[in-house]
Image (cartoon, rainbow, N blue to C red; front, top):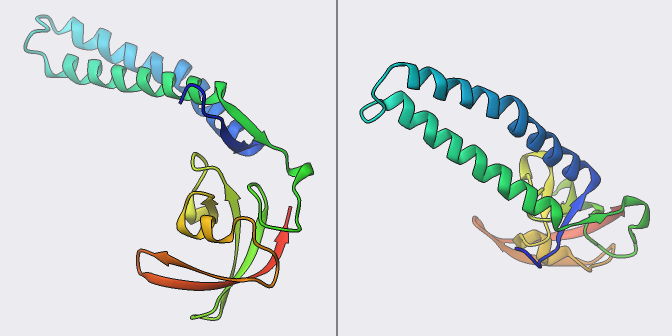
Length: 158
């Protein structure tokens, strides 16, 4: 990941920065307190509380390192410069599912920010790949886990 740029919105970057600050502050302190408490029980060779705290500490430090590396390689998607003539990363897209006649609005984001439950889809997902670069009025088909899906692009927004 050292040379690969990661596309993210300002909101996504802010969320990661907040998580990083929490991990470096509050979470590290809590884990440190658990380690001190476990050590106070005596012999650490057969101390399950100590082992659990050490494992948690390793996980926290790994996540901190991952987030720091990720944030060093971020390329910001500037919502002010989004071209709405075709689907691009950062835009919001209103689509119509032709099988179920349902409209949905998704934001196309990088894989780090993707969260389908919040209507944020990765440009690397099947639907993201299918609609990226397309224009309003185009119909595209893609394979989903539940089978082929056909959608029509109704609107592209910032």
